[in-house]
Length: 457
Image (cartoon, rainbow, N blue to C red; front, side, top):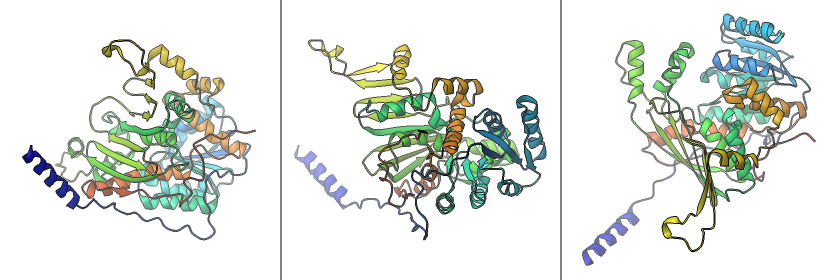
């Protein structure tokens, strides 16, 4: 016993003597003179939103189709570096929707002409990741609101550039995070807002998606090339965005620190070698990346990224509350705390009620999201786009612009959800050291009390 106590005492002294790992600081530049934050910003209403869509690959072409059904808007222009893509989408609009539009195509800077078009109110950006920020900045400088596909930015500098330009020009800059409009996430968020789970203290999200069938579809191999050249969680927002809303990030709480860990790249080099026929020794991104974050109010988040292994598609999406739990994958479940029955055997004690199947459907029907009217749900499922969530996202974007309302997702959401890419790289390159998450609101993170949607009166 004495020996054990001696060992424990030595361990305690050793632990006390080991310096706590220092948090790697990040810079928060002062807000430029004359700028103010964009929290709850509402622009002048636009009765019929003229939309210009840049990038007409799979995602952009899908956006053309969906947006042609969104009331209160019209497709004013379509733009792509390749003329045939623009012609193909014009043909769809003419033959399937009885619409016509302007085409901007032919070179990598033709988007500038579209951004200068007075008939365009909103620039909807579906390009490869490298072109997201240049197009968005140019559009805002020319008086356009912008909506960017995910991930909207890959570096801290890009995040700050978007924040500063949005604040200075007073133009909306939103992230097109469709997973925030998934039917399960919408309902779980409403339950969280109503306190069904108690206080949300932990959340998980992920992007587990085997991209083997898709690598060849990316224009000039840009996505695999990006994974080869960059390390970190390169695609964090699908799992991260919805849980940040449930945790009221920059609406009463904020992200403070991040730490990351990854596997070695096992499958990535094989993909490059298969495509090029040459050995690949410089592949940067690990097959699996795990990132943990902490908030100012002591909450935690785990997010994961894996596009290299053949496990089933999974966004994890889990909310852990003091009195309940919601999880979508691998099976949708909601679990609520209950009072145990009296006078029963120990083995029969149950301190929680698990809702699945028809019971889950009935429970979730009681907490329908306020944005999800029966008419909108029916139209969304008919038009489609990842089961309808893409259409709901587009509808809400146009609705808020029509009515001069604050957006569901603002430029600070964009920056917070996207900064994980560079911050995770910094942590990984420093042995998993904690890294400070910058406050993109510059001190205004508790100005709003909880996440909410805006509605016309």
